[in-house]
Image 1 (tube, one colour):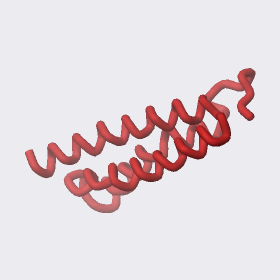
Image 2 (cartoon, helix red, strand yellow):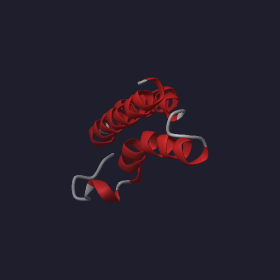
Image 3 (cartoon, helix red, strand yellow):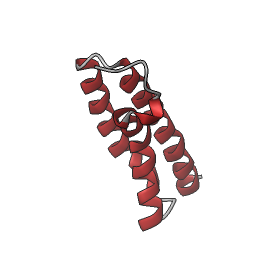
Image 4 (cartoon, rainbow, N blue to C red):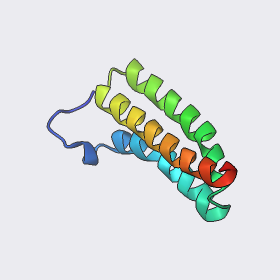
Length: 87
């Protein structure tokens, strides 16, 4: 289970939940274009959803919380890309 003594930035599962959507968006921006990266929310949201369900199943609230934050950050970045593409 989670250890309350270690900070969140030393927990690899918390970092995975937080950064997975951002890294998917960044990879799409680097290898494609920022205008195409709006579709990263479909990938990042779905992957984040299953990480969140797994964290809930293992009763790891810190990972679940950081995964929700990561999904929201991915939604913000994807919205920016959608604004560039369709705005």
